[in-house]
Image (cartoon, rainbow, N blue to C red; front, side):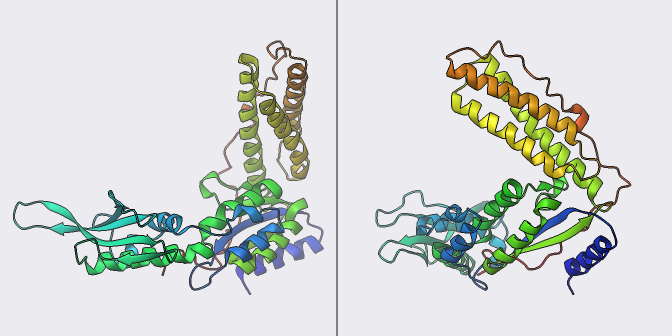
Length: 354
């Protein structure tokens, strides 16, 4: 039995004995790469169930694959470090390719000749085949380590042409969890671990089942009242406070200058969104729902009035600005409060490990 299964068993037993479900702690890991390839077609089909299929491109150009590989394949993959091996764009790329990068290896010189960087390998697009290829540098034989790294770059770039890596999926999953499931980070310094309100627990469990098919392993650990509620309440409160502060800045802009109508409309939509989301958090102990709802209502009224003034070709300068004081919403977690259980790691991501 996995850690999450064990903890969920405890939570479900507590619920059957009268405890209340307040939400779930959610985290995820990836297992995508050559050892577990996930095609872009499959990723798009799975994410389309959540309205995000188009967030993953149907294909990646070989040139873009090389650019990604330069960031995603560590030099440690060939036993080097950034002080001894580096890669940069070819300064005089030939006309027969769309992208070319040169791998350089640091060369030690005798006596006081100093150090230098020797061209050690090359990765470029073979336009005729539409793939990345690894070669020796122009006019040189290269070095074993440089050639090996160039081969790693080409292999990962070619994988990404029709398959996804964790980078393709991470932002999409974060958007779904935050925007559609109303998750908030439990600790600011631990981005990637989220608390989901109870009204969305069934949805996140469905999400976990869906994305397992594309190499995303989502751990969902149910939480009952008293376990993670205080921590989650403060995280959610501060998350809403951040959004309110952003809207307060927009209020000041509206009053100071002629803000476009679409800017007012988006701000009004955000205020309405805050109002609707607050209701999902009201049952979590310690969450300051009334205070947040009051401020959101004031913001909503301001932007509605601003929109009317804009439609009437009038000025927003005379509309009273809400106070929007979020200082009372912010605080630090009690040092004695127990942290929520961590989401267990299900699998390692092998991005770039070719």
